[in-house]
Image (cartoon, rainbow, N blue to C red; front, side, top):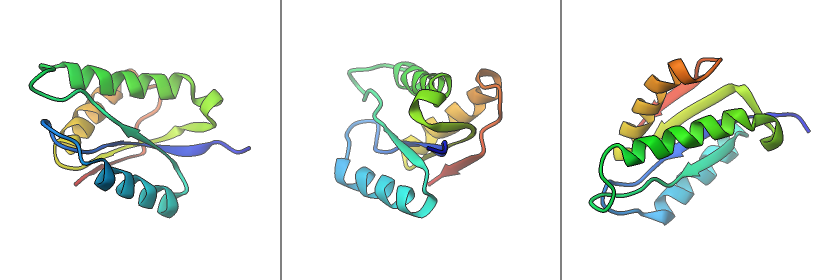
Length: 111
């Protein structure tokens, strides 16, 4: 098997989650990009205060890159994407990735 690119997708809102919408977006991304899509669910407010969601998203980024070989992911081709508040999280993760990752993110998509 050849390692594939990885897209971490953050969707939804701070207060609720529309699983059908997010699943559809991730399926379309997978079909169009031939990348592995990680549909990242993050803790929601008001039960979880800042920075819990950010910390969890950064943990997913670190885990997927550290275990890229086991996941068949090309760690030189990692992207983040998100819509609504997920775009906010994707932007924060992209900024943090500059210091966390040995290679820069390939792409950032904010919707």
